[in-house]
Length: 151
Image 1 (cartoon, rainbow, N blue to C red):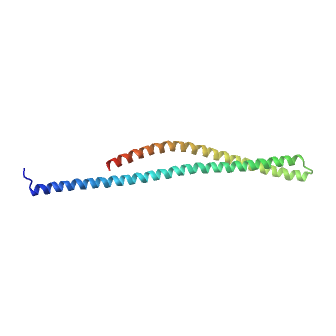
Image 2 (image 1 turned 90 degrees about the vertical axis):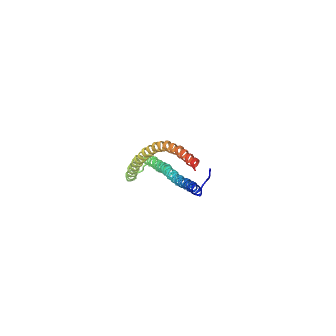
Image 3 (image 1 turned 60 degrees about the vertical axis):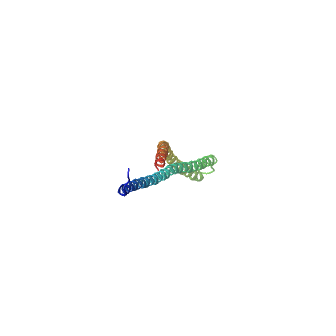
């Protein structure tokens, strides 16, 4: 069988077409890998935001608890002073302080309870988010492996 120059040219063109198709395929896989990396980074950033929100709410609760403790101590101090009052004017002044501290204490307790509710809701949301996040990481790993095998 004699191979003609025309047949060699046709074989060359077909080979070039296959190489071009492979290069296009490789380029698409590279783009998919880049997109996958962007998705991983976005998911990681979202995860960090979720965790930061929970930490922030916990810090807020701690601040309210500290304020609550301080007001409780103030209230006890005023109660002790009220037991040893010397005159009606001092009693009236301490009674006014006591009422103010009691109101402040009630307001802080209300804020603290609201913060705890938000914290618990966000913790539940974070728990669900982490399940989905784990599933996404598994999916990312599988997609990454598949793309790298085709590369």
